[in-house]
Image 1 (cartoon, rainbow, N blue to C red):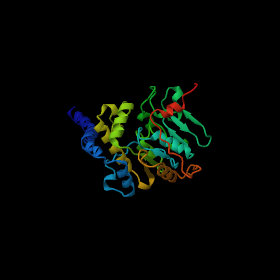
Image 2 (cartoon, helix red, strand yellow):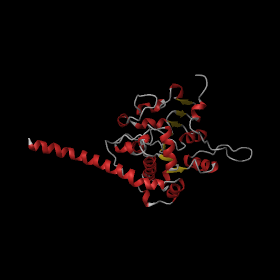
Image 3 (tube, rainbow, N blue to C red):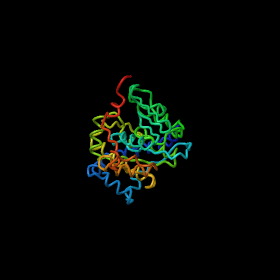
Image 4 (tube, helix red, strand yellow):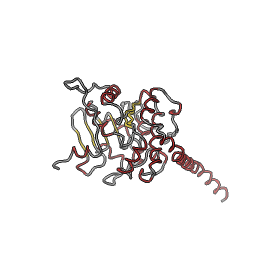
Length: 300
C-alpha cells in the first residue's frame, strides 16, 4: 500500500510543479511587470523601435512551452491580429476591408470576393458564424472554449485572410501552430489607458496571457496596474515569438493616416486606397466605441 501511495504521489508531482510554476509566474507578472507598464515600457514608439532594432528583452520574456499532439497545418498566410480589443481592432478591420482583404473581427465578417459583409448584431451580438465552434454556447458574450478549440482543426479558418480581435489572443499559439506562414498585426496602445478603458467597458473579458497559463482572470477582477502589466507583457511575448519581418506594429492612436495606410498596405501586399482630388489618401478609419453597432442600426 505504501509503495502504491508513493507511486501516486510521484505521478502527481509533474502536475504540482506545473501548477506552482504558473502561480509563481502569475505573481511575478502582477508584481514585477506593473512598474514596467507604468513606465511605458511597451509604449508604441518603444515597441515600434524594437521591431526595427531587435532588443534582447524582446526575445521572449516568457517561453510558453507547446503541448498536446501535433496539429494539422495550412500554408495559408493568415493575418493574425494578436492584440486584444480596445486597441483599435475595429478600425483595423475597416482598414483591411478598404484594402480588399477578407477579414473576420469577432462580430463582423467581410468577404472580399463577393463584397458581402455580415454581422451578429441583429442576433444579439457574439461571434460570427465562422468563429462559433471556438466559443461556449452562453449568450450574448460567450467566452472562448479552449477545450473545443483544441479538438478543432483550426485550418478551417483559412476561409478568411485576416482574423482579428477575440479569439486571437486566447488561441494565439494554437493559430501559429496551425498556420506556420502566418503574419501578425499588433495594435499598440498605452497600457494604462488600455487597462482603464477595458476594465470599464469589458470587465468580464479575460486579461491577456492569463488563460494561456490556466487562470481565469477577467480584466475587471484585476487592478488597473495589473491589467496594464498583463497587456504590456503580452505584446512583449508576441514580439519575441516570431521573426520581426512577420510582425507589423501599428499605433492607431499616434501615427498619421498616411503612415498607417502606407505601412499596412505594404505589409498585406495591397494597393493604397484611391487618393482624393487633392492627392491625399482618405482618413484612416478611427472607430469609437459602439460606432460599428450604430452602422447596423435600422430596420430589423
